[in-house]
Image 1: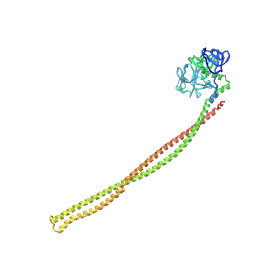
Image 2: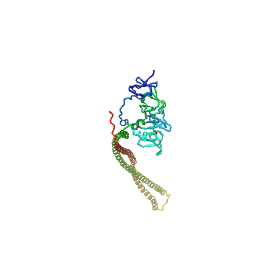
Image 3: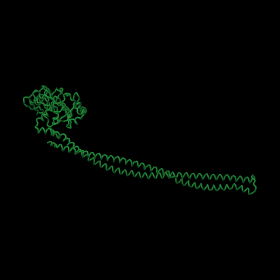
Image 4: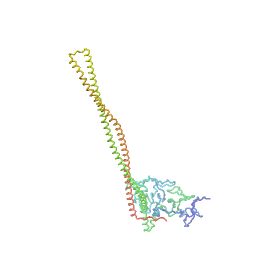
Length: 501
């Protein structure tokens, strides 16, 4: 008893080699046969087997609708010399082999067995361009660079060209396809199409339970689950490029021209429309940002003017405080000098008084000694006149000393009054100087704060001016880019795809 595995669909179609058509649920059996409905056949009896496709959802993508049926290759991948197409991105290539994304098990494609590598979808017109080309690169610009591929690495392809030497291009961005040679196939083979876009060609297929196994270069016992298979054909098979060439060859001249021309600028047209939509959105955002930047700039002008006025006003206050401080300091220094002068005058008056008092005391003592000597008879005088003359010699200095003392006393009293007065006047001056210094320091601090605010407002003003300028330039650039794209789109003159129904 066989265990069967199949799809849930009941609308698979099988065309036998004898022309008999069968419909029903296809099951791949462990016995190596294929069952459809109540009929079991061998793989070699199959002419065409199409598995029921899930209900298609019409694409809302404009490019997909415009290019429907007009693309030779829709999914990037690699084509072998034997005609097998592996719909997986190629991420590396060297002299030995290709490396596919995900490094799938059971697939090994050597470089020598490679016919072409497609880094982007390929149109029918581009496929026709490859038909007569020598090995080289097809660029997205439409140019073709002949040369020997050296390697694919980290998103770049390096090629040795006679014309340009060793050159590197960015795959998928600058390079559409790497062309090496035309595939050579046996049209009597099997072809297995998959839902992911693969097209495997093989002389023989092995049917297993719910799967096919292919063991032919570049596949090594590669298992394809039935759920992944879209079709199986035996005989009259072709690779993806040959199918594209056949489609062009079978078309009438008018149809061929339409096929070749209609896809030439489709991608660019759709790309331009998409970019135009994005640019319009960006332009709207940029204009909104420009309006905000203008408001910010105007507000920064107001702030800068305000803080500049405050800073200048604080500078004026500081100048007044500075003048007042130095005036107070000058008064303090001047009064201190006057205090020293008055103190010197007071000291001189005291010295003069002391000196006069000393002279008075000295002559008073001499007079007393003279009177004593006279009274005791220690001194003999000639007569009264001589006595009086000698007495007068002491009295005169005494009188002069008394007058000097009186004068010195008056000078001392005057100097004391002046000293007291100047002391009273100078006493508050140090305090006033300190207060003036504190006021000056506070004014300087206020200036620094105002200057800091002004500097910050000036920096904000400059940033706002720069932001407004940058945003204005961005708007102009977007407008220029939009106009340029619109002109290019008008030159392409390709209508938009009709909306899906």
